[in-house]
Image: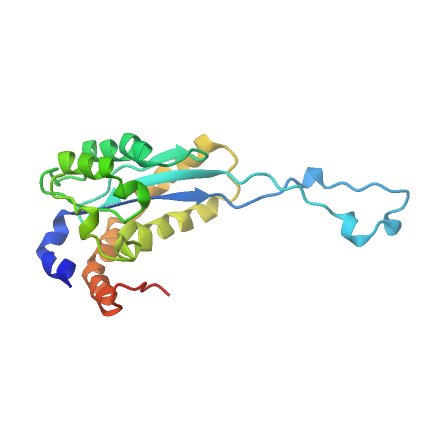
Length: 215
């Protein structure tokens, strides 16, 4: 309730919702690896006739911020590293500060992130206080904050859906290029419409006494 009363509709123009997530390309199999050997095919047990050799699915870590005014460029990182507070500061926060959607100004941005462990670290909180003074500190964030973070409950899903048409992607640089292209192609109106539901979702979280509201 305190969180809902603190921010009004007029404040939404200054909100910047940031988040990161993993994108994984669908698993695929190399048909050329399907082999079975025997004097006669009919004598081979069914369970051994066809064997698939899965290849490791390609994945990436992505990060960005969205607001009513626009969006930051998409950060695309190779997966396989430990994403901690140091990587978060180095790869994400400084990048966002330098690429705020116009006309947002650093001193006016209401910076919203969820309560992931790397976000809550003291070094991250201090760093944010220095570069974006109006950010919302972790101790003022509501429970189940992913339910209230626009990328988390909406925008990432839109981006992942746009990848389906490309089918198999087996090269990281190609995946990176496609992700950035499709990120830029998401209609700003769709992002704005998602952000406009934020206050309604805050009330739903309040009604659920801080509980999870997604079905």
